[in-house]
Length: 355
Image 1 (cartoon, rainbow, N blue to C red):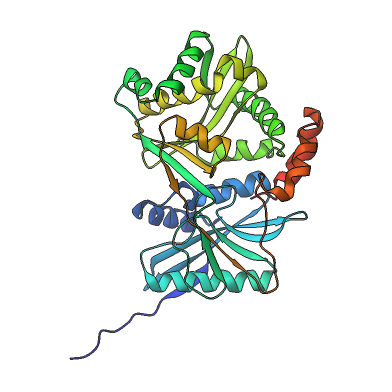
Image 2 (tube, rainbow, N blue to C red):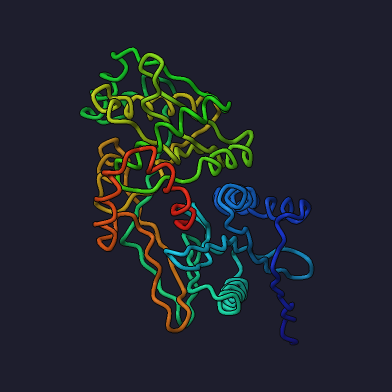
């Protein structure tokens, strides 16, 4: 009996600015139930908002896509050069169910990195290739997700007692909640978010990034803001993908703490997401053991370890863009003391490199 013929698989770089190519990959992502960060729209939004080039490779067999590796070509004077899957996201990596495609895509990424001077290839999820030079870990970050409840009262009761009491305090403060996508919503969000990350000691992303992501996902993103009087004190930019809402860039001012505005914000987002037809609340990732990690656990979410991987070019040290890293402790302490206008002026050029 003759052995089965093994069809040849090819890999090629893609041009995501080709609308037909992008639509084809979007279809592959949808068929495979892949993450928001695998979508060409994500990579192109990042490129438009930060200047970090959208790229990637597809594996094909007889003209049919068998695998996809989305990449952001991250370049930074401070943090070096890396191919990141996916830039400014918490997910990505190789998307395929084909064992051969995994190897082909990994080899293509390695060659591209070596040829273009990128020190590493970083995969935030997906299958980590079992190849020389690759390493993986599952002990640094966790994801948090659960199903949304059937109605508003059930949603409140799904929150553990202590956290639920904080939400009730927020409700009692009669704060105003607004959801939108207009220029005023973006301005309110940036005013809150930039102050929030400055207080944490982190450079703020360019305002252009948030505008670009809203444009990239015109039907799958919005901003929910909590106001005290006419002043925004908590705000979150969220995405909606595959039945889940993902509060992605959010924060609150110092004034939000006493008013429990952050707690109210996430509860209201749960209600809003259900009305939009979402079934799950994806609270995103947090560093294991951190304050946000504990906050999400206290809300009744079960932490699930996230597996990431990386390949480092020979002689290259691993890139460190973790804002909680001990290596950045002194910089973080100094950044917290900057006046907000100064932080907002010098922060975005630095944050572009934190892909």
